[in-house]
Image 1 (cartoon, rainbow, N blue to C red):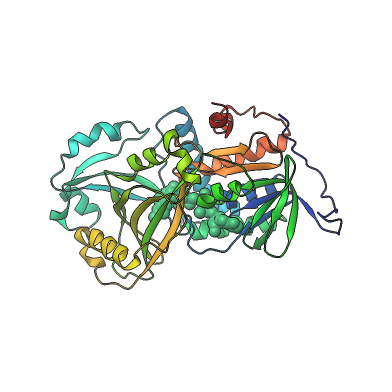
Image 2 (tube, rainbow, N blue to C red):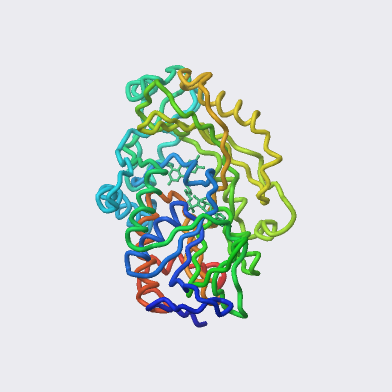
Length: 415
Ligand SMILES: Cc1cc2nc3c(=O)[nH]c(=O)nc-3n(C[C@H](O)[C@H](O)[C@H](O)COP(=O)(O)OP(=O)(O)OC[C@H]3O[C@@H](n4cnc5c(N)ncnc54)[C@H](O)[C@@H]3O)c2cc1C
């Protein structure tokens, strides 16, 4: 297999012979994945075009922005978490713009009828294990919590950034490095025999030596349209965004038992894979994982409903009903959030089959990489983007970085 990684000065030959730029890289998607990757590629002196369709409801823009740097469970994820938190601690300085990084108390709450000690083993698997505390101790950390609504919680120091500010900081630094950014929907990849040579938008084609698909939950469909298949899956996630909350919340609250992981395992099982390319299919019932985060400006996200549907259609979702469920879930714990104005938001969240991201060149075709499927991306994505960029810039066909090698798409396609 040949994976040419062509660098050097930009050619001035367009797809149809007219004068136009050929980028070293085109990155599709300006979520956390595309923003960090495009920045890292530009940092290495490559010419990069970052294209995003401007959808305000991407997963990154709906995200809590929690940096779960304590959550490594094996050598790979522990190393990524350690490198990730190190980067976050100095990222505002590096990018010369605030990401609003801070550390706050995470509360993983559980219901009064749950025996918290039975969850301790599950939390003991993490590099830094969250500590079991009583409802009273949780209330001391978050005075807005209704004491009798929870049986207790697990707590740990959690990193936190403002996802929007982090995107802006990456984008500004990227443009300062000479990167070009464009708002346009990518309608297809330009395929010439066994090579992807660029992208198509409604109005124009853009040429590149390499295209990176970092389009989150839309990556699979985009690649499918070019007859390329990747084992990436998505959930439809829903939140309520409250623009201004006067009551101050000190903690990030999430459930100690997040139900969506089991459904994600079913959704990404090899036996289910073919359903993702067929007619719309409902894989599992929707799940509500009640949580809340308040940003430094007082805006607050209440989450999260996850729906396991293979299609991208949102018209079947009853937003009013979702809003009622989200509000009911959180006000049981935080009555201070009742009746505050807010609006419903929807996004797609992508994931892979084994919790590691899906990155690297696709097999049997040149010029196209995927960079998606991150679990806990705020904790782990930054070092992956840097190490991935270093590898592709090195010109080596195979990564010498053992960690990057473990994340390559080919771990599934060559199975
Ligand atoms: C409620 C909620 C809370 C979360 N909390 C956390 C958390 O605390 N910590 C954590 O680590 N993770 C969290 N996540 C997950 C995390 O936010 C996502 O996994 C991550 O943001 C995904 O980033 P991405 O860049 O891969 O995808 P996205 O952010 O979805 O970005 C993909 C981009 O590609 C664009 N795009 C798609 N198709 C096209 C096209 N054809 N042409 C051009 N552009 C296109 C989209 O508009 C989008 O901007 C949360 C997610 C949700 C929904």
